[in-house]
Structures are given as C-alpha cells and as structure tokens.
Length: 289
Image (cartoon, rainbow, N blue to C red):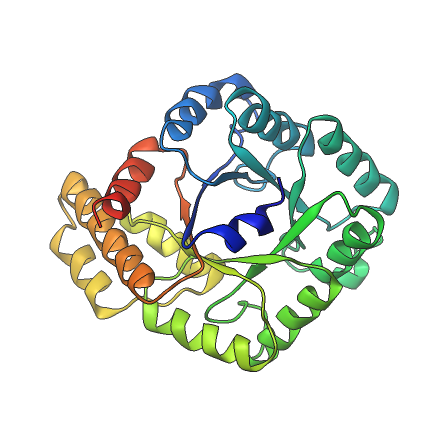
C-alpha cells in the first residue's frame, strides 16, 4: 500500500522510525524491537539507511522486508543518493520490489566533512534528483521526502529551503516527514509558509523525545534544532537524574504530539531510537485523547 493513501483516509497518520543495528551487530537483533512496535499498530515504520552513518542498503532492505512481510506493518525504506549511480539505485529499488516494499524516503545523505557535493562520484547531487529518478521510472513506488521546519542546516534561509522543498514535490514526492523539532510554533510557521509556496502534500511532524543531554547536544550540532526555554529548564532540572530526564523528556514530547493533533497535523512521526518504551508512551498519549 502506498503511504500517501494513509493520509487520504485518516488524520493523524502515526508512524515510527527505527535504524539498523550497528555494523558489528547481527541484523536479527532488531527483530524484538520490531515485534514490540508492531503491537502498537502504527500506520507505518520507517527504516533508516544505517546507524550513525555506518551501514548498507542491504540491512535497510532486509529490515523493511521483515516489517512488511513478517509483522504486517507497512514499511518505508530510506535511501540516500550520495555517491550512487543510476545502476545502484535501480538495484536497490528492484530489491525492495522483490520484497513487496512499495515506499521509499528519498534523501541526499550527509556530505563527508570538507567535501563539496560536486566533487563526489555518482549521478545525484540532491534528494530531488533521486526523487525524480525513482518517480519517473518506478510508478509502482511511492516516494516521500524530508522537510526541515527550521530550514536545512546548510541552507541560507528557511524561505530558500522551502523553495528546495517545492522542487522535491515537483520531482514526485507524495508526502513529507520533518526533521525533529522541539518548538511546535516553529513547525506551524514552516507549515504555513510551505502551503503559501505551493507545497500541498501531507506533512508528518517528526518528534524525538529527549533522553540525555549528550543526545540533545549532538542533535543541535547535526541539524541545528533550536531549544525552547522549557527544554533548557528540563535539562538543568534533571542534570544529575538520568531517569528523571527521560521521563520529563517523554512527557514533553507527548505534550508536543497532543498539541500538534489539536491543531490538525497530517501525521506524527516518532523517532524511537530503537527503544520501544518511547513509542509505547507516545502512542499511549495519543490513544488517551
């Protein structure tokens, strides 16, 4: 089933994200996590390309296949295009098709530090190039794209980034999933700006609960997400109470989710970090509504 069809039939669409085990761990180590997540009956589960930038498309395809074919949940396979040529893209897509996977999230991927995208091998410079390649050649695949409520960290402005986002839509993206954010007002501003620019496909809001101070510092460095005062207070209050910080972080993300639903968000995408308890508490908050 195309993920785009979920957005036509319900609101909000609730989805979860997992990543493959790290390089030295067997792929089977993720299956207990998937089993627990599947019991929550999300609309779909997305599988990233790798853990911490280290991994292969084979793990992504294998895990996505298990999500769909063993556990009966629609799967969304991430695909990054940096350094890939068209033959590699075709091979990955065909592998997914053979495993009954119909949905791909088309991404550029991280540029190695100090390098220019133009200096890298491969046929694709931007996510929109990959999206156009897949949507133009594989009508049996539904392709989604990433969105950035505060603008991509490499982009000069949110306005310019939304222009890039529109190009992804024009290339064939059918739905969007945002990068994590901690301030819903920033999402609402982005959403309105995107609509005015003609970005008229469903957008799922990406939510990641706070689990540690180091996690937040890493996220800020990697993606430039800003911290509202409420988050800073939580970090300070529970600086020496790791378990208290986890509880407060999940409670905060649940409030985010409920506010988003109250304001008619198309979907909620929960970054589980392969920890089922995060998904369980987040979906419980939704179900209590």
